[in-house]
Image 1 (tube, rainbow, N blue to C red):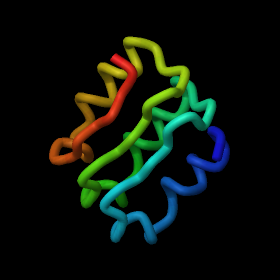
Image 2: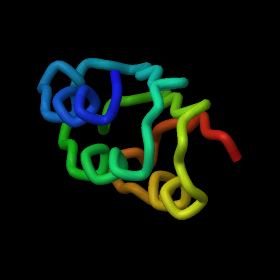
Image 3: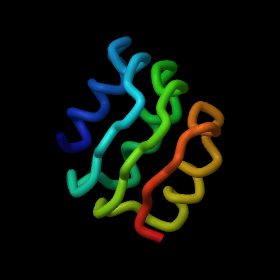
Length: 78
């Protein structure tokens, strides 16, 4: 999907009905955290899989702290 694809996906209202989003091994980096943070459509996610991407420790910490993912189980490389 890549960073550009995830940026587009995060703007889609279709995500409001998604419970599991598998983004593992998509060559994503720290830049995608902003689009995830700003997306109003992720609050119903039960599981978000970011395993196997190029996220720094700082990005992983920011992802864990996002309000729109408080109820979500995060699968991360940590």
